[in-house]
Each structure stands twice: as C-alpha cells, then as structure tokens.
Amino acid sequence: MTAAPEIAAVVTRAAAAVPHGRAGCDSITVTTEDPAQTLRAARKPDVWIPSSSAWLAMAGDQGGQSSYRSEETLATSPIVIVCPDAEAPKLWAGRPASWAALAGAVAGDRPPALSMPDPTRDSVGLLSILGAQTAMAKSAADAGQAELRLLTLRTKLADANADSTATLAAARKAADATAIGVFPATEQQLWLSRKSGHRIALRGAYPADGPTAADFPVAVRSDLLDEDPRGLLTEKLIAQLHSTTTRELLTASGLRTPQGGVPDGLPEKIPAAAPVPADVAGLRAVAARWSSYKEITSRVLIAVDASGSMNQPVVDGQGRRTTRAEMLRRSALDITRLFGNKTDVGLWFFGSDAVSRSAHTEAVPVGPITGEVGGEQRRKALVGRVRTYQPASGADTPLYRTILDGVSTMKPRGGEGVVTLVVVLTDGRDDTSRYSMAKDVFLSRLISLHDDQRPVPVFSVCYGAGADTSILRSVATLTGGTSVVADKPDDLAAAVAKLFIAARRGAAK
Image (tube, rainbow, N blue to C red; front, side):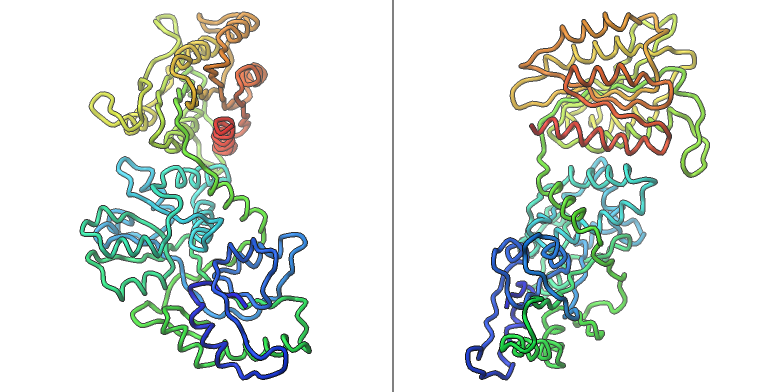
C-alpha cells in the first residue's frame, strides 16, 4: 500500500498491528509517496491513502488506469494561510481571513511576498488553488472577473514552487517578520512546526470564503476481490486504521479525525471544507495553467477610449445604473493589476474635439512598472489615472490614428525575448474624428509598420453595439493580436479575461 507522507508514519504503525500469517500474504508493506507521484505511476497500489480525494478523483479520470473504491475518510487537515502575527492585521483588517482579501493585498501598492506550492505536484498547492478559485467565484460578478482575480493572484507570486514544510523551516529561523511573507500550509504542518519553536510568532488563518482540507481517503483497488488473500488482509487493515488506537495516533500527529478528535491547542470550530468539485477535468486544467504560467518580459501600451459616447448610461447585471466609462474604468483597473514586475507599461486616453492638439493624451508614459513617474511608483500612477479617467463630452473617436501611433511608439521597444503589444479598449468607430482616414488607407499604413523582428500585436476589447468589430478583427489578424467583443455590461470583465489570456498565449510562443 502507499500513503501520503503526512500520514505514512501512523499508517505504518497501524499496518504493523494487523494480525496476519496467511500463506503468500503475511505482511503489509507501506510505501511513502507524494500523491502526484502515485498518480503518474504506471502500477497503482492495492490500497492508497493520498492527502486529498482530489488526487483520487483525477486517478479515476485517467483512461486505462485502475479505478478505486473509496472507503471512509481517515483524517483531515484544513488549509490555512500562514503569516507572521504582526502582518495579519494588514491582511485582514479586522475581517475574517479570506482568499479574496489576500488577492486584494497582493494586488496593492505594497504587496506581501506570497508563495504557493505547485498544484500539479503538491496537495497544499492543489487545495489552495481550489479554495482561491471558489473564493473568486463568490466575490466576482461573473466568471470573467473571477478568472481575472485568480490570474492576478498568480501573477504576483514571489515563489510558485514553494514547499510549505521547507518554508516553515525557514520561517523558524527568521528574525524579521517581513522576510517570512505569506504562504498556505496544512494545519498539521503549522502545528508540527510550532512544536519546534519560532523566533517570530506565526498565525494560521482559515479562509472563510474558500475553505479546503487535506482529507486522506482510504482507497482500495476496485479489482481487489474480498475473497482474495490480499482482499481479506486489506479488510483487516481498514478495520485497524479506523480503530480507537489509530485515531489517537492521528490526533497526536496533528491531524483531525472524523469522530471529532482535535490536536491539542487547535480550535474545535472552523469553516467547513468545500468538497472536491465534480468537474475533475476543469480542476486539472486550472492546476496545469497555474503551474505552466511564466512571467514574461513585456512592454504594454493601454489605449482607453475617452470619446463622448463613453458617457452613455447603461444598466449592469445587478440592475445598477452606470456608464460605459465606468465599466471600462473597472476593466482597465483589472488589467493594471495583472502586470508582473517584468513589465514596462504606459497609458493613453484617446478622443478629440475641435481644439484637440492630438488624437490621444499620454496619461502615463511607458516605463518599468516598478519604476517611478512624477514622484510615485508607476503601478500606483497607472491605477490613479484610470480611477480619475473621464471622457470629454462631444469628443470623437480617433481610433485609427491612435492604433497607428501606438504601434509606432511601441515598435522600437521590441526585440528578442521581449513581448511588445498595444491593448485597445473602445466602444466606437473611426468615422467623425478630424483625424479619421479611409479604412484602406489605415490598413495600408498598419501593414507598412509591421516588422517581423519587432512585431507589435494589437489586442482589443470592443464594447457596445457602436464598436467597429470588423475593423478591429482585421487589425488583430494583421498584427497577430486578438479582438474580443463584449455586447453587454456583464460581458466586459469576461472579455478582458479572454484578452489577457490570449495576449499571454501569444507571448509564450
């Protein structure tokens, strides 16, 4: 049989206590192995105790693999968000701990250093992603916003391959609370670590909006017949695993038992853990996307429509009256939060009237997002300019001129190993601006700007019935970008999520 490392010592003692002696099957060998390794192995054990039923579900989802019947859960250990006691008030501000609050903190001006394990290799990582995904779905108005918030969390990781046990070991030696950062762990891992003593007091917070737990199911191969010698011995093993003696050993090792056993010093009442989702393929896909994410050196110009039509009123999915400008403002803010520290970024507002000297205004010049502009950090300046963005009444939409100028501006910034692109958010078409030009002239000039060595793909979100979706699709085709349509207010966040994912997909090629 095979058991996860967190429970293997207790399982080994239980196996040794099983009465045996039948010929050909007189002992039980317990192998300690991370569930991800067992999942990848060609030959599966007769009995498997992974650290999450999620691994068991994924094993059943693999074609051609031996399936398991799951017996009663042996023990549980909730996922907690660990941080120094002194840092907790900054994260939760007197409110219950949550993944949503953590996502907001890491997207802020001074984010805490957040580390998480790889969800394709580690139960803490897998269960943390499951919890965070659940939380984002609760806190967002739609699936697009939820995906954006989860992406934001991923883009801000200081370490995406952390090991919770190793991180706790390092934290035990740390003399400075700010050097520890924030990271998830099982309650058991933190409980055991505290027994070794810490120079800095650590707190384990139970996220109320996405509680998950390692649940240690006892799984038996479906083709292991009860009348076989191995089957009979397995029955004895399962009985021993659920004995009073084993339960006491589990609690003494820092694990909770389904019968109510709680390790010393831990709270009895905690948020109930969410079950593993039925969509196993979806969970596997989220874990794979998270694991394969790579921070890319990129240079991005965001061009936001500031024409008069953006002041038109709309009603969002919650029945609230707002404006197109407010909807785009929220979407632009979502985009600014997604940029990693290896990004150069700038912001333009485009719109013109009779006295305009330019088709667009440079709100934030392109430069390192971690650098300064006007005495403040560029990321903070970017957020500030977006929040105060206000379209001018009567201003037209110089869409073509802005795209040409944007590509021309970003082209010299390209080069090998650098992704350079223009992002356009608009509700209009180029038909009344004094900078307007014929469509064929515009496309001809755009083609002339193309450089295989320094490509500048244009990605766009077309919002509303007035947006020129046809021309923006042509722009995307010619430059190697993507154009996404948002017909209704509630589609806008989803469109931005699709846009960002498409931009990253193109950048990773």
